Image (spheres, rainbow, N blue to C red):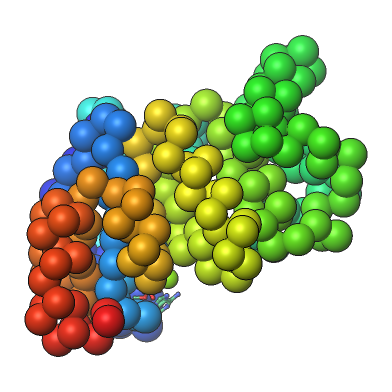
Length: 232
Ligand SMILES: Nc1ncnc2c1ncn2[C@@H]1O[C@H](COP(=O)(O)OP(=O)(O)O)[C@@H](O)[C@H]1O
Ligand SMILES: [Mg+2]
């Protein structure tokens, strides 16, 4: 599904954010990426959708290599939910935000409507469709952002700290929703309780290097490593 080989990402100012990352994700896996601020979690997700350019190495999604040329194809297969929903929502109506990407890809209004309806329904937010996104609560905004991603019918979704800014109830609802989605999910997070509930596998990053890649059970039980890395 996703094959990352020897990936290094260096930002234009010289910061090496990822250093020789190797990882593959199988279809339907839910993988957590954990690590302190600056470890490279967001950079890893952004490089998969081509927002951050690859310096060396390669990323393949279903045997399609991530390059400038293949981005339209990659972004149909992989959807990214940004850390801050305000970066993702900019229309005046929820419906139009969720419809944005399908319309951008030139789908007919009939096809757009059916995708928007089914995305809203799978997030349990059909009742919000006429609302203004910027007036919604944090939890509602996050759901709208995810609905916008699902509307493209991707097979992989990347989520950057999806439970940040959420109150306990919204957080719980979001975790339940993610648990029901069949998509391959890669989730960057500090929320280890969510990791325990949701993810089979955990990748630990430190300074852009993978420190551990194992089952959630094994990684979360390794308190010594998590403490050394200042994750707990
Ligand atoms: N646009 C950028 N330009 C330069 N350095 C960046 C940029 N974005 C992130 N970085 C640096 O890359 C490293 C990894 O950052 P990031 O991927 O945001 O980590 P995380 O999401 O784990 O907090 C950090 O050292 C950060 O300062
Ligand atoms: Mg981040």
